[in-house]
Image 1 (cartoon, helix red, strand yellow):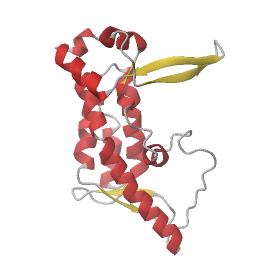
Image 2: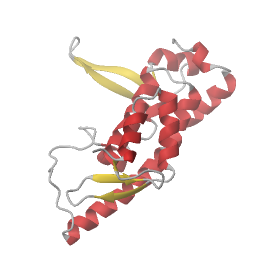
Image 3: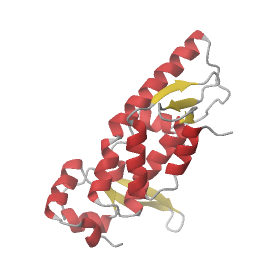
Image 4: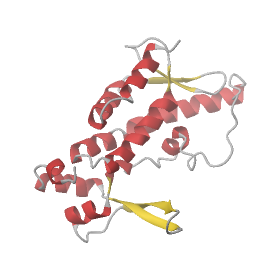
Length: 196
């Protein structure tokens, strides 16, 4: 039987992007962690019974960053996601410390042994632990980026392998937080100017 906290995490995954990020922010403000004896990262919240799977929440948080690009999210939504980066880093730092201590003292014996790169496979404990989640909500389609910032230098790019062309194709251009804040000040309603 699922815990009340796990049910809440599952409910959040069904919300629209803005609602999901808002719900994640409310949930993480009072979240604490533990690690099961088999190495599963667990989340706890005083308003909910039982633990929830921290990596379920972390995976969805990372997915929300991608949705910011694909759903052409408003500036405010993107910045709200970015504002949670340090919160998630602290939560995962706490869980990582508990995991390492448990491995050292023998109270944690992981059932699952991961092979390969955790970041490459998208495991949230690895991605967030290495801080590779930072700024991902600030990726824009290239045409959107150029419309908003012209030839200004970007903070980075994201690529995806194309079977059709047998090459990497750029699918997003990253703005800096300062660029987004500046654009928000000059563009009264970005959502109205986006392609949605």
